[in-house]
Length: 167
Image (tube, rainbow, N blue to C red; front, side):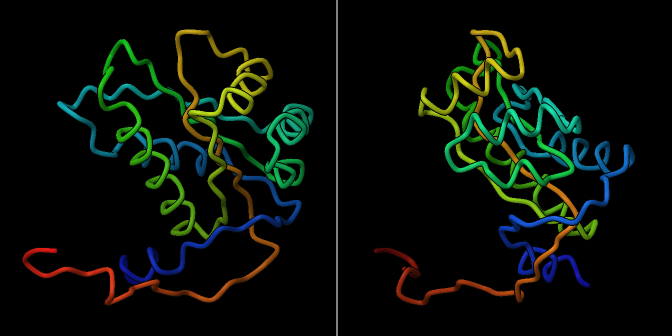
């Protein structure tokens, strides 16, 4: 599969097999996240990588749309230290989140992005489960595993949303 095909093949996957994600795969995903661009190369991100079944279940219970985490092999909380980059941490960590999901697709893994920030009713329980300090923000929670469902590759290109030269 070409690099561009991997982008089109990346889909939100919420059903997983029981196969674990290897330590090498986790490392590759985190390296991909840290390869993301960041404003002034400040790299405000921190990642909490979870493979423990009990903690995955606690995360599934904590996030209102995170039930699939109970069957995932891995969850990654994408966090930021706003003291490092107070203006652009959201963009930086969004780029890191997407890099992780695209890298997962390249590795044959499936995943889905669960939004946390700016909803405190989502952030607070995740913070409690993972012991994340109060001065660290939680942008997203990524549910990852070996896909137990398949979805066709696609582009969502819409000519109506393209404005050549000006609006």
